[in-house]
Image 1 (tube, helix red, strand yellow):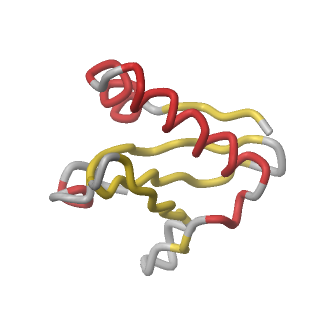
Image 2 (cartoon, rainbow, N blue to C red):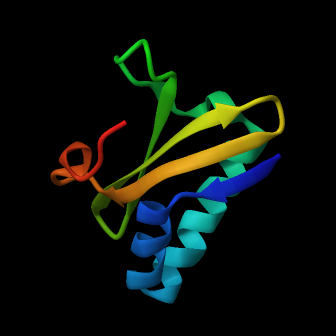
Length: 89
């Protein structure tokens, strides 16, 4: 599956260190292998998923949605603290 990062996700990746970037890419690879790995968000009209993972005792989220059968669009990546306030779907 092809993975496309939106602007907010790219900004977060640019800011974080190399070790965290590698972990995020591992998680994105896991999502591409199993797209239903994350939990579906409660907003039924959006059809987005949120995948949770922990890195160095900090909880992170990756929010993504599907575009057809072959494309995953990553909406946002960030730490759990105030994560859902940082973007609007």
